[in-house]
Image (tube, rainbow, N blue to C red; front, side):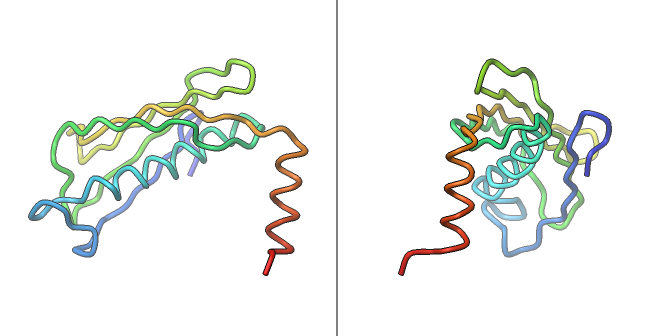
Length: 121
């Protein structure tokens, strides 16, 4: 959901997402950041694709407990959209991320949409 200029994603990860004992695997945390940051960058009005995603893990992310992703756009430079996010359990910072998205030229977006509707055999 959107709260002002922040995209919020709340989740409780089950045991299927376990990495270290009792903790969420970092790959799923990275995927969560990509989703939240992708949604945040889309608020710029220019569809973009992930160019770079950097995750810093700060403390273990617990399984079976509510966690909260918060993502926002930092700045836009031409076709580059820079965004950051945090992952929190209560007030504890579990991880943070920085991302670069590249907005697509309209003709590329249209081609991707057309290809999705008419996949090659």
